[in-house]
Image (tube, rainbow, N blue to C red):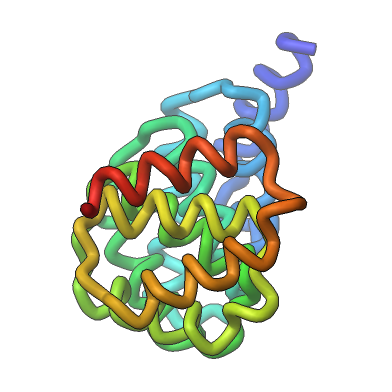
Length: 186
């Protein structure tokens, strides 16, 4: 499959400006899921995404969170892209689902991005959507709160209460991440 992925990366890189935001996001997600960091491709995705976001090209919250997740998964700390994604996220944060909020918070924490307005917006939106959070979203958000040293007591209490109610569904990693998070902020 590597020759095919190389061919996709080369062809996509050459035609990146034709991609819509969802196609950019899907491509970044696919390469991150496969743990393949093709630097020229990631740079092309970043440049195109920034231009589309800056130009007001419509996207949706999933595009934003998937792109942030992909770059964070590959440990690509592209500040101009992260700034553009943060701005786009702020304007659509009320439309994010629980997974998008969790993935975006995780990406910020993984890349040590301290965008205060977005952190506050994610916290507020997470509080409103807490009844929809599943175990992985809870543990990822708790981990993110700890990594970013986010001092938001209402969010921490809501995460704790929801985690307790969903504990029978937690996987071992969800439990260990949540325990680590509590120990880190204590």
